[in-house]
Length: 186
Figure (cartoon, rainbow, N blue to C red):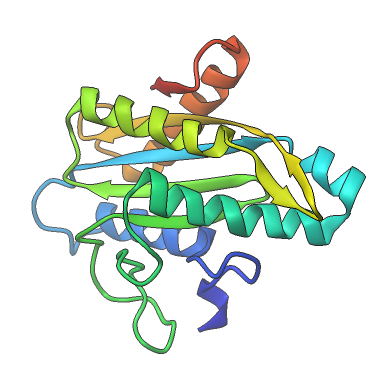
């Protein structure tokens, strides 16, 4: 069960995201998988780890995860669809509501089942990036970090759900490279 929960944030982890997307691609899946994937990358975690230590970096990840959920996605760890059962094992279904996971390092991934409105998704990406741009309180200091959000959509961008994650990551890196965008579509 602990294999599916991120030890730092308490959110589902990368394995859950990969299993959910593999299940959406699998032969048991009936109908077309329709969802948006948001790949959220923080800027500045390494600086926090180097200057204040890894405990502060872990606290930043916890606070960032909560901000993404509460201020960005308007839900909580209790109300989001984690695709995990009461024992922390993977459920045998796709998420029916918003799901957020700590993917790796300074990256989070959200799955939004049924989302397809590009304007609403762009506003959501900007809301998440804006929430993460507000100062974080760590070790009695106010610190600012940046964040970029990449968005890919199924089936518009691809019907291959495993590619969907790669496409969202590419869109996030594109937003980061331009330096002008905080949110970018694949």
